[in-house]
Image 1 (tube, rainbow over the protein chains, first blue to last red):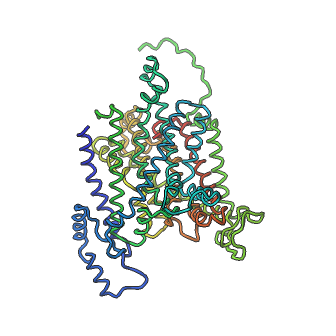
Image 2 (image 1 turned 135 degrees about the vertical axis):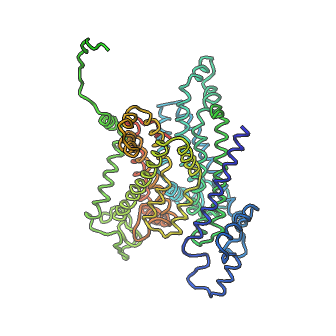
Image 3 (image 1 turned 180 degrees about the vertical axis):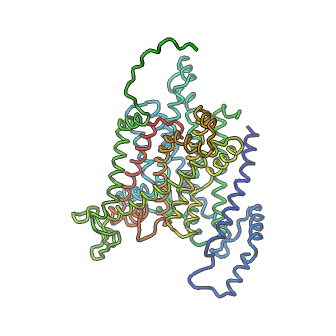
Length: 305
Length: 295
């Protein structure tokens, strides 16, 4: 197990390296720079600015310098926000995004798992059909339709919550529901499918023959295997929740990193774009790693591969 | 071998081709049929509708402004007095067009990549599929966003960028199909006849993997349309005065407090399309009984 984890950890290094390199050069080869604006700056000032941020040096030296600084955990100064480092900006904006993502994941699991298990156990009952149709709706009503609709109904029509903002817990409800429901639908479908497959297997029959109660069979024997598809979905789901939060942050005016990222791309704030991409990529790579480890832990068959 | 014993007479039943069987099974699935019919209806409306209604998507009527649905404008008008129904139909052309074109890009890349990996096998296959695994783990939406921001928002780039993201699963499915098929006898026969690799892949292997490919392509279209709408919602997709359903939803979401119909109708028709595509895709999957495409 330890060897597996170590090997996977080592594999993430080249992946991150490729991401950093690809983003660095992509960002540099685009037309327009961070200091081009409608009013052209005097050439001397432009020169000073470029010298200050090291943009006058050859590209390969900028690249090496950047790699060196990342190795020390420094993402460099922001090009647009004078006197603020990318680390500071991320530090200020990330908590809201992480909180939103965590809550959404919670919504997805808390709704998706029980519904999926129930739908599988009571197969072809009204509960199963209800869960399936709700799941289908969840997949087909995208977040950027669901979010505004929820705001329209609960915030504007009923007045139960604020339409936007990020102050107290009531502001958390609508955004995390919006972001989480889609994934709840996926989790529900995957759980149902996984449970149905497991419930047909011999060891479940053995457990039944030994007289185990139905609750015990479902929770102790079947759930572990039935969760496998959900666990392998968690990696992509977390990536989706992180990028999905861009839209949610825009709809609900949440001061998170997602909105900052889209803005920084528009502003050509190279270092902030790079820093955010690196951060998101690392987060996603780590989450995939954790998902893989959990999967091996749940399914002993995989250990020998 | 002794073949003197006469063979028992075979009662030949009228034959069923696998394709006809599948079509029959598809017809039994009411949801899939409903989905398919809805899609055909939507496509016809989007293509023919604007001609019949004789209005253009940019025709403004500032005096009129935003009006709720009425006899003159069935779905109401937006703040510039433009007919929402007409705009929805034009937007549908773009959204459906992006869905089809980008899916085609994804399909081409995925099928060729998967077929080569599966056919060649060995080390090349291991490296190619490992690459797919790695790309799977990347925040690819972020790269599409960067591409769209940096290189102007042109619609061809949109097709390519979305297609470049969505080919991975197709590659996996095609590869697994090809790996299973290439060990079969008819491929051995094709080899013995001295056919080239290209001919074997494209004429013998891929046609047999057609079922899973068509099923997954159907399921890719909604994913692609979602991504396009997502980008348009962030202001990165189709640019005005053109509008896709994504941009209409974005406009609607900004103005919903006063003009609910601007959000509800575009959102509704977009969801209806996704729903139909998913039902049709699921139906096709059951009809063609494709297990490989289930993940």
